[in-house]
Amino acid sequence: MQAKAKDASPARKSAALRRHQAPSARKAPPLGARLRDLRRAADLSLVQLADKSGVSVGMISQIERSLSNPSVRTLERLREALGIPLTSLLEGDEGYPPAASEMPPEFVRRAKDRPLFSVGKGGLQKALLSPHGDYDIKFMLISFPPRTKSVDILVGPGEKAGVVLEGEIDLTVAGSTERLQAGDSFQFSSELSHRVENPGAGTAQLLWIMNTKPSVIHL
Image: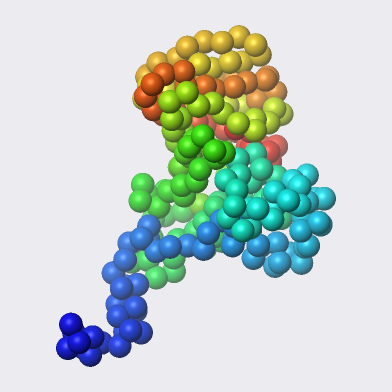
């Protein structure tokens, strides 16, 4: 064990590891740290960012300290106040690490490079599928554990659509509820009240598509 340790310095080992790691294996700073750095780069205090975004000082503080799993609605309010794309908040301005040996074109998102994040306390998981950048349309995979539902939904201009990939969901739009199963699809105006719930004992997975112009994302 000691002989192996002498073969290369820690610095050389680290450099070699960085050269061979896939982009997804390199750990980006946590969301909270990115938010804090972006806020400071914009020369905003917690109170100032709260005033601009409509997100409370306490919530922003919890996110920055990795004590809260914010909804995309909350992240959208923050990124709008900071004047950055959602992808910059989820994965940094660089998108892909500069040292990546295989960088996809700007219109591609590799499966291994999807930003993943949790929402709320129910275990709801989201994976951003849109490539890095500020696009009019964004889409993601949303996984609903058994008997969970969407949280912190925002109603406003835009459209939403999707396909049930696995399991079943109860989709409520403007007070009307319909049970959808794998293969069923949907589309509606974001100005209508809506809710998604997984009533079953298994995981439900959706492909969720959003028109994000005007610049508010609704989930």
